[in-house]
Image (cartoon, rainbow over all chains, first blue to last red; front, top):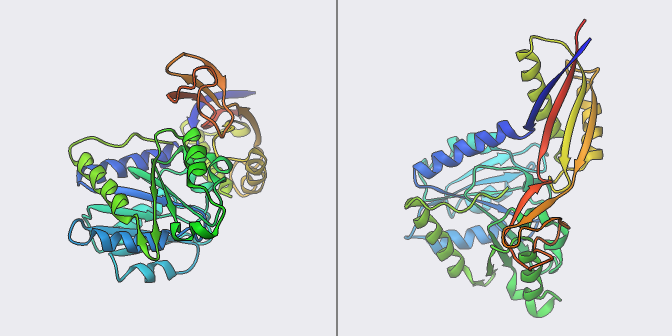
Length: 227
Length: 115
């Protein structure tokens, strides 16, 4: 004898509920949570260094850094802003429980901006809600302008695209227009920023976007949820 | 490759349901996986086969049904199957599309055997 139990529930329902609760808690305390995703080496850590420098005196940032095994990124960021390291033990993406415990270890309970530097990977992190308000995908000019169409889920679920390493544009066959067009076919509402970290360029517009989003969050206007 | 962690979530979900049902042997697990869920069904099966052996549901078999990515244009009401790299409406060019299916990883039902 057997019985069929109808469930019809997403496998990620439990983790998504925890992520939604974390987002709500951050909204209530006025912290904007920004999940930074990209392939390895796109420049997440460098962008964070430049962002922390540019935001100095204007906002209080903090960062949770995901890494497979080492603490190298946390060490690079510690001179710039409060950091907590999230070691995934080899996992290819972050999940909300790691973010929650990382936040509790952070030496800053109420930052204006909480960055989460995800594990370098354009595939798996796309499917996991970390309780962020904004998902920001970085694409470096050395990777090629055809990446949005190859990793559509990541671009579809993001709010902004930051093109990094713009200083190398004269040396690589990367067309900003092509990347923009490719990405906006997948996510028409994507905001676009073109930046370089060495030397720092385009950082001001990116920081203005973050601060404007923070102000809106505090007046009760949240970015649309994208999953 | 995050299929292993998704299968662990699935096994926790199954454990909760079995507990609510006051036991039983899980024979079949039916999943619906969207083509835009960010999951590879074949990898999901491999992860399931490996992880289920060490779970209390080692007799369970996994059946996966794939669900296409379907959108509805909010401007002209067209329903169509989306290619993953283009969410613009093929009829009116509109960019306001509501995704109707293809993004979920859903536990549909469990078949429980009773002694």
